[in-house]
Amino acid sequence: MVDGRVNKHKTDVSGSDIEEIQVVEFLLGGDTYAVNLFDVREIVEASKITPLPHAPTHIRGIIDLRGEITTIIDLRILIGAAKKAGSNLEDLRFIVLDESVTHRKTGVVVDEVASVLTVPLNDIDQSKKESDDTSYILGVIKKEVGERGESKKELVIWIDICGLIKDKGIK
Image (tube, rainbow, N blue to C red; front, side):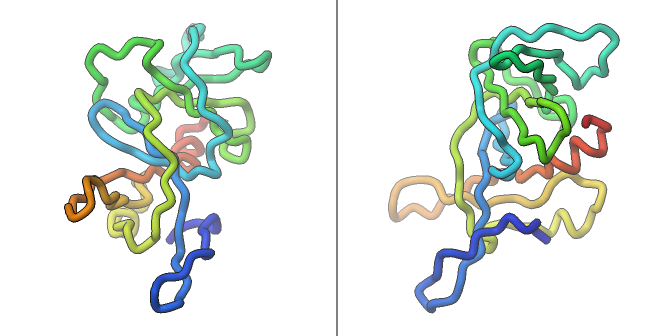
């Protein structure tokens, strides 16, 4: 089941409402992931991270984001994603999470932010979520790609960033 942040504004050709969600699509390693748009405060270019001594491995450190100390989390470690070959700090992005997700300024490191997608719920396979309650995968988005006339789908893994952050004790 999807949380209460679903849009019901569009209608299909039969006149019935289409439920949609908006997500931020990003790359980690060679894979494409997404988080709910409403869980994101902003996206910023990566800056120098100051490491914290004796911090858990998933905490990369802290940054000064416009005068506010922001904790930076390595999402790759939390979800077990592969590291992108040759990724430099200047190529990375920070997705700063909304304060409804964490009670302090927190961001996650990603290789690249691809886009903001509006996805109809019928384009999301949520069978994985129903079979495993410990998973942080809300579903798999089947994104249409390619030129007109081509029927090609790209799979985007939709992550429950709120559940992941909460269960890992990051507040």
